Image 1 (cartoon, rainbow, N blue to C red):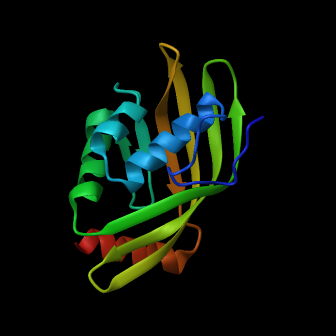
Image 2 (tube, one colour):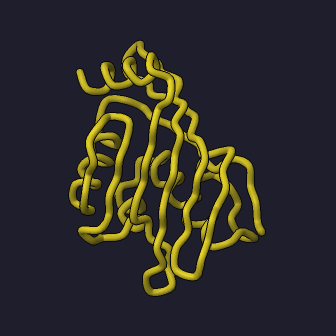
Length: 153
């Protein structure tokens, strides 16, 4: 099994499995605020869904695209990396489970992020496409600060 400890999108993926490459592509798109690459990483159907720390569930690529568009084109700078992770893979799906750490910066506010994360990918036309993401912030004070800061903007 090809294994790396931290994924932020800057990794050399040449010797890695296709599952790791899909994760690297996601984090590259996210940390470089590239909506086109993000769209390529996700399944483009009604089945795509996301549950994130800001609350609610987004369903279908159009709703998810709006979330990423607000993040990428908003006033804040956000960076995350995936670590302490495992990948569970079958022929046509894989699940990546781990943690994200990073930051959210807006004006003079910086919040250090600590998120429990899972991502599910499905294989379509021999390419991995993300179908679901779930993120949770365990620390109640961090969750409240993050929600208050992001939702008030």
